[in-house]
Length: 374
Image 1: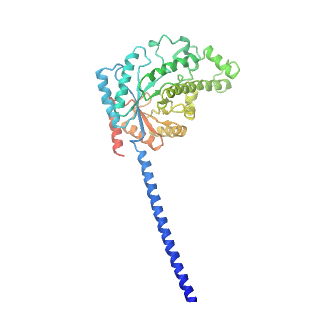
Image 2 (image 1 turned 90 degrees about the vertical axis):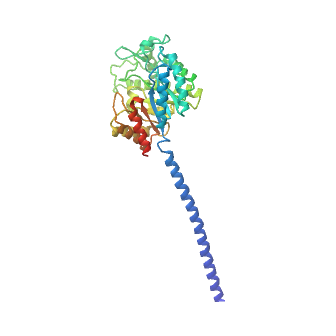
Image 3 (image 1 turned 180 degrees about the horizontal axis):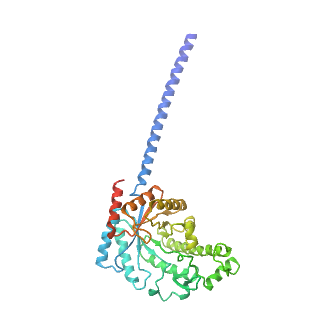
């Protein structure tokens, strides 16, 4: 009986070992499958982050305000180059606000839209509400709509703290929606530099109603608490206008994108020109932020990109601006490529190039080479 018991125990032991081995094989197979799926997922993520998938945009202008044969030929050649470096969004500097070129420029806009869509790209006209050309001033613009600076001088820029100005800008903005655009790029949506807010009687009265005391201080600096509130209030007027433009755009078509060109440092921009673009991101009143980081110092560029990435925080798309040539810099081809690589490695959603043209083919060829080396 004892021997039979030993045999039974031995059989049970073997059986347990068999089942354990079977379970191990099953778990091993599951682990292998999970591991394979994980590797596949990581590969897909890596592919999605390739340069061909990142969002690339460009600010550009046409050689003429009219839709001539020469202009169309130039656009065909330029858009072909853009397509080859995987540009997806075209921000067009235009003369739509200039009464002298308004009709011909809108005709050119329609041609640009067709040409862009044929190549799978999206066309966004640039809308610059902060600048008015005195030589082409339209009859409906009133002289009291312009900024009166602290010295009493009239500046050729609209005062966004004025409710009538805001209504005028929104009407002008709506003109773009009559065309098959893919979005609107806001440029110069700000006050002029050097704290050039308007000190006209109506604006000061509107501000004083909000804070409850007259604004007649002699110190215009942060030592004056009323002046601090004055600066914030003016920034709120810009934010309110951007929000209203977003409502108009999305009310027409939710798929249309609103992008905004902003100064490099949002804290300084809020104080000096009323651009509180951190709040724009938090409130999601724009779809794309384009901080204009124009420099030929790539180390400095990297610092500002990383800061902008933290501010955008995936709430809106971030396309740092890279300039080949601007009033602030003249970059080499290597510097442009380096800055594009910084945008990619720092977690930005892409980049926007400032004025890539056929005259600057060396930059376009460098970007092509960058892509081929990936």
